[in-house]
Image (cartoon, rainbow, N blue to C red; front, side):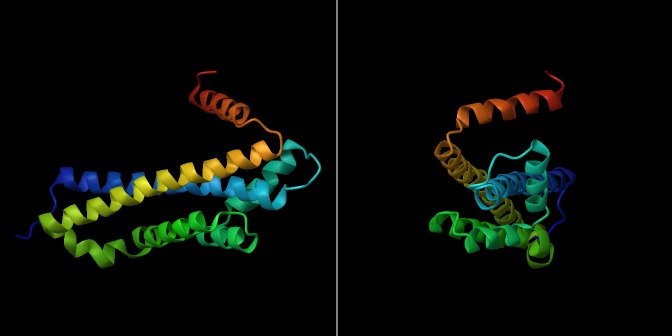
Length: 167
């Protein structure tokens, strides 16, 4: 049976799309940070905080495909992780560029809606999982440079508290 989505379903769709995009952006930020550290800062003398943020800003301007190309050209990610990130990029491209036209009709049936919602949930969970894999690479790099990942995490937590107005 075909029918329009009700308001709760439509709200759930928009929420699921937003969760996917937000979590992909978190993953991209970890990737950009890792690339700045591994590609541009690797082996350099210590720099000012301003210079480090300038380098990070350059990476943050890149889209996911460009960032993955940088990672591949510089051979800075394990092959399996890079392949998983490329697969995620294809799903991200579906979400951002093609989902409405490819799967919009499916939203008019219960079965189709379920399929789309499952795909969105899978994309979100995959982006969270891959972000954790990237964080392991960041931690390994930090440890190889004598930087404690725990100290870096504590600094990040301090910055989050400041943003939330807790510190």
